[in-house]
Amino acid sequence: MALLPLGSLHVDSPSARRDLARARAAFDRGEMADAAGHLTGALTHAPTLPEIHELLSRMAATPGGGLDLFPPEPHEPVGRSVARAHLLAAAGRPEDGLHLLAGASGNHPGTDWAGVPWVSDPALGVRVDPGLLARTIMRLCTAVGDPAPAGTVDSLKPYLTVIRHAVAAHGEQAMLLGAGSALARRLGEVRLAVDWATRGARAQPSKLGEIWLGYAYRSAGRMPEALAALRRAVAYDPDDLSVYADVAATLADLDRLDEALRWTELALERDPDFDCVVHTAHRLRHRADGDVAHLVALADFIRDHPDDAHEHTDLEECCREAAWLGGMPAGAPLRAGRAPVNAEPSADALRRLLRIATPTWAHPPAAYDRALGLVLVEPWELLALLAHPAVVEARQPTGYEVWACLGLLHHGSEEPWLDSNRRRLLLGLLDGDLDRVTQAALFALITYAWVDPEARSDVAAVVAGRLSEMASGPAARAVAELALAAPGLDRPTRELAAATIRVPQVPRQRRAGWIRRSFYRG
Image (tube, rainbow, N blue to C red; front, side, top):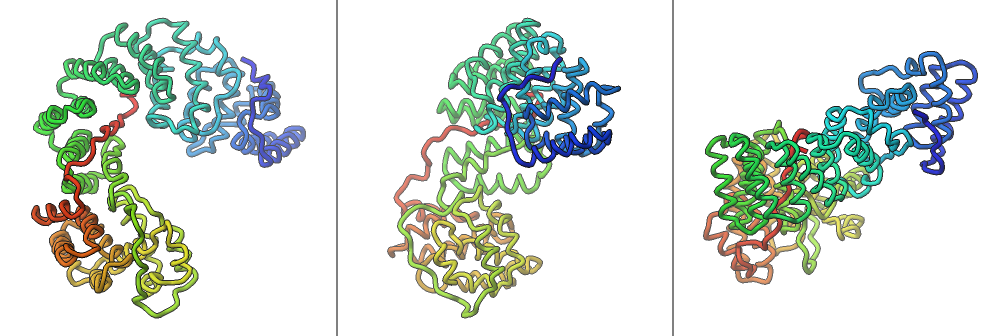
């Protein structure tokens, strides 16, 4: 298959031009290894630049087809494997080259690695083995996410073209249709995803076929049909608990929350530590009653099971847009805090604080982890930064006080909590009327209770005391929002906090988060 012509479809860059010029000069001198090295760099910066492919064609015309210039190596630069892919296509082995391009797209999905003529040539779809193509596409799907980020869709569409050609050539191959559906779904081609998944499930009825069909229906918003397909998947394999989680999520989307919770309970009876079900169960329990205890339990599970088989975003989705759980709450600004230390922090301390300060975070444990970099800033500097003029000026919207207080948690972390200096410093910041520093210190205490179960009863007592003090004052709502984020709070205190902010404890209904699956699920 020819590498050229590419026409005007390319991305140019000065770095690519420089590397290309050096590659040409080395090639003309017969210094082939140097030429290959420079060409690798050029491909990395501009993978569809026509002049690069002209030089690749010259390499392909050398003895051995140029493949010896780009031997496989562990942890090799992406440009090297992409060059090998193009040379394999030129040598009449495009199906092997496609596998390498898909690997590059999986690692760098925003780059147009596959936007070349031989990938879109119908002949590739004819000659490629359908099973091999299906496996290649499933691995790609795992890497790019569901849905694929908007900035990656166009660069991934050439693979959809290959599948179209392969489906036209090979007919009703169930695995190919299912994998194609998974990719189409990720790229926003929902109608195509449903069509291919339907044909695949009809061609070869199976659990996996019904799962692909259920996912396609979900993406199309056809929830009753998605539920029916996933129930059929359970019938094929009643021991696959991950499908129970999918059924539960779909039932929740249909506002059948009691049924959804029963499905999670059935699965947890079989395996109380099955990660997909645990994540789904805690998310749905929180949706049912709004109690933060479910999210704290999920955070504990994540901490105790760092090697879960799948990526999950349930905790982040539940915390998103919730006051303090996912970021600073919206509302009228409070007055600025006072300076607890009359000293001048270093410029480096200021830079480090402003570098990490952000008004949002995924969830409290993620905020705790993000503040780890402030372990290099002395505690007295963190305290001084709370009222530093440059930081005060940058207050909106970064919430620097929160990060300065979170930074204190990483100092003396080996000390037992109750006798620790970090606890003493944060409690000291709670004195006086409520202001931004007081809120930040209280949130830091609450965050530590999320990551250290042994601190929960102590922090809960502090939060309850602060809420009781402020319950009838103008700052009551601000403290109540923090209290509802605190682990271990007793029920009367939670009810007081909920009543204070005058909202029901059941949050507004939100679509259940999509459960990510491993590549063989699609």
